[in-house]
Each structure stands twice: as structure tokens, then as C-alpha cells.
Image 1 (tube, helix red, strand yellow):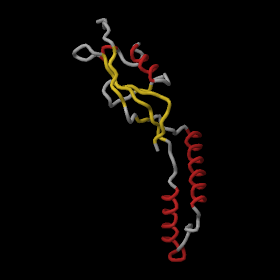
Image 2: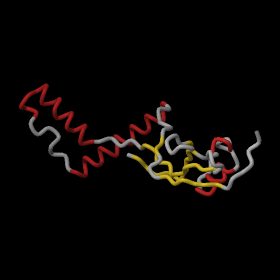
Image 3: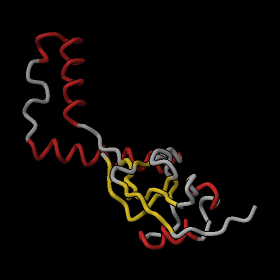
Image 4: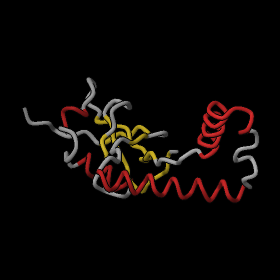
Amino acid sequence: MLVETNDWAVSRNGENFYRCDSSSREGAIEEVDKGRIFDQEDLMSDWGVRSFYIGKVYEFEPVIDVDSIIERLQYECEDQVGENADGYLSDASIEELEDLEQRLTKAFKEWLDEYGLNTSAFAVLDYDLITLEPVEVEE
């Protein structure tokens, strides 16, 4: 699932976003304005306007889908032992399944951390076009 962070990202074209160091929108705009992310000429349009896109960063947070796991285990059990498997795990209550989902998700996140397998990928779902005051670009 995607989870909103306190981070901001910027893009020249609205497609390829770069995460900013600042945790505020104003700080991220300042980073761009001061040339810390893009070269100023990269922001310049043909008509001399400096513009870029800015949006909130959303990170992927894995959640184990316990319903899929239970369904898979029920199928495998029935496939291996036949009709004797009828009802396997069907007596688990909603609370028990939620508990299992939380435990499995926690274990999976710990495993990701232990082996350094977390993703640095992120999404920017909503973004705005920011236009800055023109500056003289040295050639």
C-alpha cells in the first residue's frame, strides 16, 4: 500500500521526480530556486520562464494479504489430502486473521530491514506546477 510521507519531490517534466532534502514544500521550492537540484537552464522554457513540478512523496509499504495466503494454503491442503481438508482454517475468526496479518507483515518488514531489501522507489500522486521568477543564466 502507498503511505504518504513528509517528503517532497520535484520534476522538470512531471514524470521523473527527485526527492528533496527539505521536509517542507517551501524548503523544496527553495532547493530548486537555488539550483541545488536542477541546473537553472534546465528549468528555463523557450520563453524564459523557470518552472517545475512539486508533489508529496508516497512510499510503498508492504502489507501481507492474509486472505490470499489462507486461500492458497486451503487449496494446497485440499490438493494434497483431498476432501479430508474441507474446512481447513475456515474456523479462524476475523480477529485471528487480522492478528496473523499483522504478525506476518511485521516479520516481513524485519526481514526486508535485515537484508537491506527495502525499496527506495516512491510515487508522487498529485503535483503542482511551480513558476519561479526568471534569472539570468550565465553561458
